[in-house]
Length: 75
Image (cartoon, rainbow, N blue to C red; front, side, top):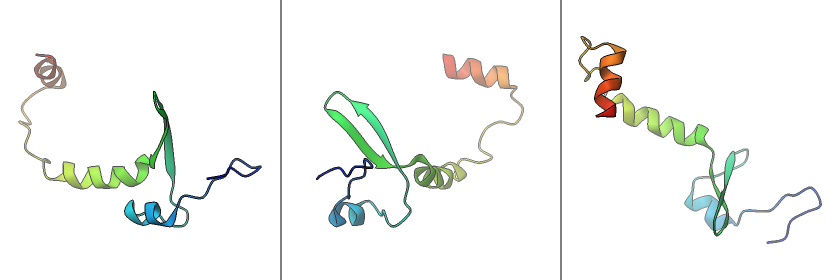
């Protein structure tokens, strides 16, 4: 891939398709030891995570205080 004067690159169509990325999709970048990692932005993944977390809504014991829950997570 070649970077344009504005710092833009074109993500190959097969990769866009594989990751469900289309026009106006947002991406994030992370520096890793091998170079730069590009992935769909957290906004898109956040919606997925919200759906998964919905399954757990109401499972926690409402009788516990925040401090008690925090203590449990630190054990």
